[in-house]
Image: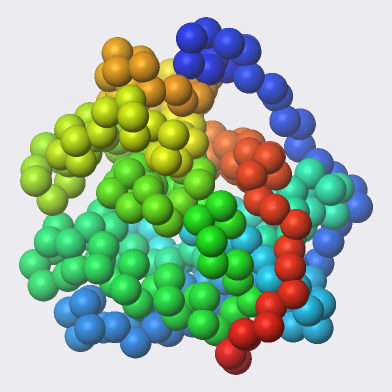
Length: 277
């Protein structure tokens, strides 16, 4: 039996799996994005798009959903995210949204982890602008979120707290939030320190969830330490600890909670008057 704790020991809600009343979104796989920052290669993304997204006249909030080490842009789709997203939208438990799943290679989503690769620069100067100019996205901070697992959990906190003007929600699943002990891959604590955040800044930072399994031999300790640090500086966050390992059984149980979290934040879609396809 797992347990769920929020910062300060509060109980967090349980979100049961949803089986019925499915929407019918579209997955577009392996979209190539020209890049000057990926060592001569194009960026590659897989995109979930809401039902009737071309004819609805709406714009949609966006979730950037990151994979882990040795994964790729199709990992989440191959592990059921489309069915879960369709179900939650169909049940009214999550607004219609666009989900962008980029291929992070094994570059930790940062500049300089691999020589010649500037992934952070690519993410903010090429990926996000491409998505927002080619698909009916809402482009305000309150309509953009980021989540990911393992290496992607690191990428989640890295991008969320180095670019807090871009995201309203950050959800790390079994995240490597201790970083890699290098300047290019800093811990969550180091990011806060380097950015110079004080309590006066907390209101403009993304809402953060750290979720990790107690049997996760790779990332559990790092999440415990990150939670201790955030608690010590009185930064409010949700901290979910439950039985589980570093595997897709754990992560597919996290994903519905990501969608439920977004249901609180994303606003009603609006007509897009500037769509360029």
